[in-house]
Image (cartoon, rainbow, N blue to C red; front, side, top):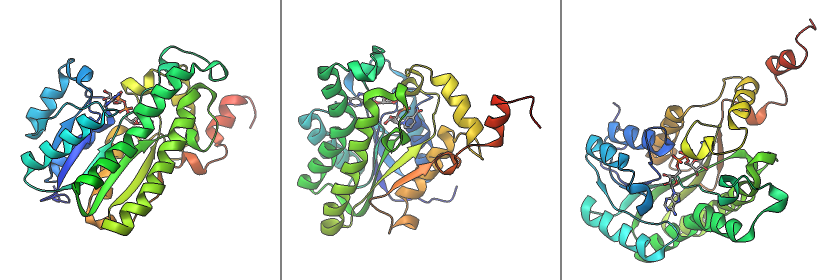
Length: 272
Ligand SMILES: NC(=O)c1ccc[n+]([C@@H]2O[C@H](COP(=O)([O-])OP(=O)(O)OC[C@H]3O[C@@H](n4cnc5c(N)ncnc54)[C@H](O)[C@@H]3O)[C@@H](O)[C@H]2O)c1
């Protein structure tokens, strides 16, 4: 334990079960001395697993639908009461596409579902930031991290509408990062994570095949949820205090690799 987050207060969204990236981030934040509240959509709470995490990390749970501004206001007010001061770090780890869930091809996207995906997975970051700013709930130099995927920059056909939604999420991080940075020195970054075997991840058609492909491309292999958690901890810490408005790849080198010898061998195994 290095106590990188000692004395820091946080809000962690998105821990659904032990596979969730947010679950690992909560465990690591606790190890590093932070205190925080956990939050998720009321419907996710009913599954009950989050209680185990709350117990393990000594945190309280505040239900909030990230599309609902009243819920989010309540979240910041209660979190500050419980933790005893302004919030130093916020994790946005929220993603959901009804088009993906229903396996609807991108070109046939249902627009009501598309809008729902935008609201849940991208606008929710804007809402979380805007409400925090109005309530002045985040301390100076505070750090906000949202999780994203490289389909925002390059096309992955199976990622359908979430590709466009992640592009919007990353743009919100930059745009808000400017305004919040100028006014309160609050930092906002996105972490672009490798494919990871979670509920949201494995809901994507062909996920397992793609997982193996990405693993064969990346020189270091796919980054797992635990290493993503470690990276996010550094971003919440003061060691990265001048990093803001960035989309940071956490993918074992995948995003900088055109092709790997491993993949060529998979395609043409008989050639020397
Ligand atoms: N798994 C991957 O391959 C992968 C790769 C890159 C980025 N990501 C991103 O990481 C983040 C976390 O996903 P995960 O893979 O840990 O999966 P996950 O399914 O464990 O987490 C998604 C979370 O979003 C929450 N959520 C959905 N609708 C909500 C709402 N209206 N209000 C509040 N919370 C809501 C869910 O309850 C769940 O806890 C997402 O943004 C996802 O897009 C995942």
